[in-house]
Image (cartoon, rainbow, N blue to C red; front, side):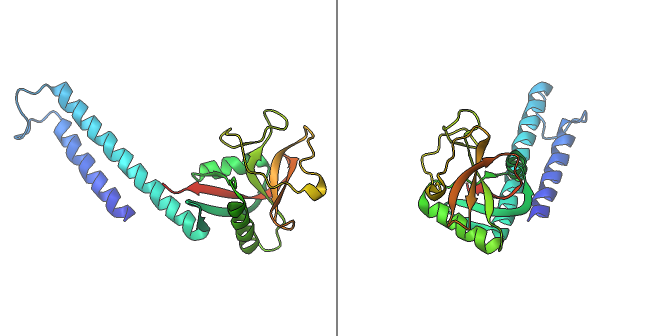
Length: 195
């Protein structure tokens, strides 16, 4: 499908470039100004380019969904190469997503179960929650305040220290959260919103 889209795009671009070249066309109206035609061609090319990019994004999302799981109108993918919190989030963004942010208990439990299945033996995963900007005010990676929390109260989480500003989910503690130093190396879960 991607090849077909690419071929159609190239064919349309080539056709439009011929229209905008200096040679007069039989279909071109003599009264229409050259600037307007060029603007029309540029506009059509821009629309085609947007469509091609949209198709690429959809194809990439389908690939992610096949490798991970689909739930809650999102796709999730565990990444087993440990990284610092910020590097993990940048990697998710580079793949078209963000660090996963559970919005309720059901989503948190689904993430925990998926992490357990996809990375057996792994204990902890970065999730997209932090209080880096203001201590005690937890937000997601888009700076939106978080309303659902699943702190591990048996370990008095969150500890509230300024050093521990990023949040990890503990698979070993049944998906409970704890705050951690952002420079710690951990595996992580990316989420991709399904349009």
